[in-house]
Amino acid sequence: MGLFRGLSQIGSTFCVFYVLGLILNQALICHGGTTSNFVREVEKSIDMPLDSDVFSVPPGYNAPQQVHITQGDHEGKAMIVSWVTMEEPGSDKVVYWREKSKDKRSAKGKMSKYKYHNYTSGYIHHCTLRNLKYDTKYYYEVGVGQTPRTFWFKTPPKVGPDVPYTFGLIGDLGQSYDSNSTLTHYEQNPVKGQAVLFVGDLSYADNYPNHDNRRWDSWARFVERSVAYQPWIWTAGNHEIDFAPEIGETKPFKPFKNRYRTPYRASNSTAPFWYSIKRGPAYIIVLSTYSAYGKYTPQYKWLEEELPKVDRSETPWLIVLVHSPWYNSYNYHYMEGESMRVMYEPWFVEHKVDIVFAGHVHAYERSKRISNIGYTIVNGECRPVEDQSAPVYITIGDGGNLEGLATNMTQPQPFYSAFREASFGHAILDIKNRTHAFYSWHRNQDGSAVKADSMWFFNRFWHPVAETSSAVI
Ligand SMILES: [Fe+2]
Image (cartoon, rainbow, N blue to C red):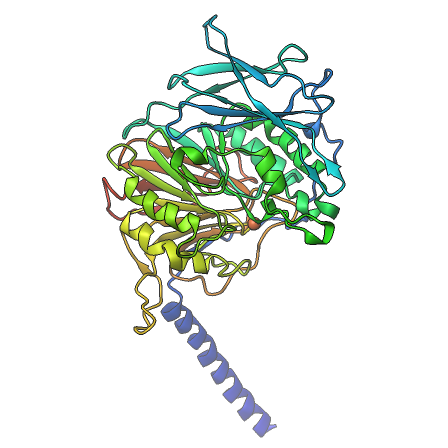
């Protein structure tokens, strides 16, 4: 009995020290930011069935469907209009006119089809409207002479340092019920996005047997309600690769390339997966995680020449989109972006990139301003450090696709991770002028005006002082 009591006293003393040790250990080792304590019901994300109303085919013979637009040049004075007809090619013309103007113009597009295993696409049309006026509302009509459908868009303001502009940010969207919540939430946000920066992984058709390409069609019908009215700027993700030699499909990106256009030639790129655009006060560089990026490759040479071209007195905000994140503290796709980071991060610091947006990890995370470019193989300096010339890295792969949330995080939270939370949502980057932009992330569970994470960004060229963030949890 006495021995037992003695042992139990030793045991409880040990426990106290052990717990104290754990607390001290946390205090000394974990200098991380905030891991949100927001608790949600974890449910499986399920794709909406093909007969859902959000996928409905527009009425009328050979009616144009899957209408979408994206920027068509480098400056924002052109728009690429794309649509699909199912029964027959139909007209490849787009008729367009300025609001309150009777001066109707038309542009002629091109039509193509593709086959993927046992699937044959509809008639895919792409038509570029050029020489548009800045800051102007245009109406446009497709299905000319048969079953016309009319949409509208607003062109961006003339490229310049102090024109305000608001971007939406969506990634890894898919076509589940959660995807629908994300898109609805984005549409309902009182701060209206004028264009979406989409960080890759569109339809997730490749999760179906034989990459069922009907899911590419349904996805395009689902998002038409937004992307027919404002341009989405496309980044290619791993779900766009569709490389499936087991069913004879050996051309990477076949469905994506046929369905989605990018204005890559306007920025002297040689492939549609990496390119740049100017839009209002922003210079957007889109990179491809799934194209070669090592030294001497086309993407490497392009980016090396591209970054020095950015004139911050014309476009103060330098933003990069890439699919796989370089800084990610979730246990999903961990370090997949590492080799690209090693190749390009020194350039990003040298050229003072403001923000890098990525997707791929189905959760949300925002980093501090950090870099990890000191390593020279011999010096052993290989850890991220705070760096006011470096970008903030934001993972926004939380669009809500059928693969579900990434909920498992590395512990403890690394110091460079400012805020992380596994919820579906979208973000808004509201650029005010050359120095300030207000950024907010919105989880789907809240009202659309609620900011679950936010910060004022200070421009790295014009106002390179440290920011503070206000994570709301
Ligand atoms: Fe991905």
